[in-house]
Image (cartoon, rainbow, N blue to C red):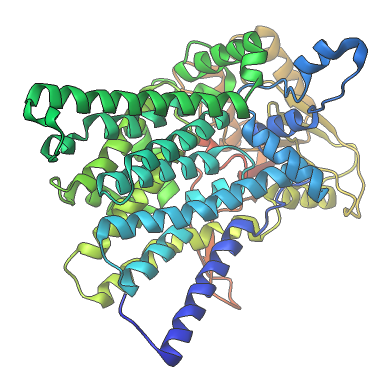
Length: 557
């Protein structure tokens, strides 16, 4: 960037500080959403694992205690985020849920800085436009904001993968030595493994960069061995193999150190991995993967994940950048390789949750930002594009700036539904409504039936029970879109017929209230808002932090 002096320099630094404050705010605002209830199931499981951590020794049973020391009894994820969350919770005296969310928010902030550095390295520009554009587009990314508020592993994995790619870019650009590249990459890969074992695929990037970087063939050497091309090639290849061995070795040493119970309790670890892989591959049928039945790989991600996680403007720009930026530039091709090597295997498996795409979403941002910076249009047009691009992210902040939608619905229920009402609800919600809080001034008791709609088509007994509940029900609660939108009609005809009759009024119920917390941007002092209805996105994008809740009342009441 050009040198600036005096007032301009002060103004520039003030602007940088302001952007950083906005970044921190976007990642930490409403970090206590949903508490004290565990609204996110993965977060709930990680919190439960942290609460089980202990390390008490006694001379009489030292071996048993050693084997159980800091054993989380939970192996879907690695121990690194659990131990880190435990330490934060212990020293700051805060809830484990908040400690996990602090980790996610902090990782997201660091990842933002890494992404900006990557853009700077690839664009090879240090203009103010490059800096400010990068900062704004990354700050207001819907996926980054959401995952920063989930006490899960997504923000950490995004940070590790971005950092690995950054190290690889520096290496192929000859800005760091081979030794620095190998050590830094192995540490990052190792920590990725201690966060989630499936991140082993991250190793593909530094491994490939090291193995297929053939620049050494062009290097000159004064060594006598260089006189013989075959010996020279063999010598250099041997060095490469040694680098790769070191890379893999250090990665797994770090994996062992920070996730020891994967090895100490190997049978439990393998059992958990077998279950998780069976669910992901569709070998094991569970209710929360039914939305993926007969969904087409890649098409599903293109339609149901990227437009919502990135926002349409950034999604379009990112796609244009991926296809339109130079195919001769090794940095762009490294980004494409890093995107595809993760995206393709993750996209083609049966389970297609949004979180599976988390590590490549920052790459889409990078493609979008660089493409925007390189297109031949005036700066005014670029500013207009930037404004449109950041609106979805600004809107997503509203999810956490307002009370959780389940609290809003519960407040209405206690105020408007009579005491002792018979309520037909849906099972398998992490938290059922109405939610009880000390702040509620109205106390009522309801008979809420948490009904298993998932097995309705297979069970004549459930079908009979549903008819009996419908005869008694005064109200019907639909806690989210998880059931009525995610079950194919041809496979679940009875279930779909129930919801069609409910929505049409044939069951004798009418909708009396609906609660949503869609991302929105509202004009000050007015009721006019730009609302982003994202209920049709992949299920987990909405059902954890902003589901739509529908309440139906019997017409005769």
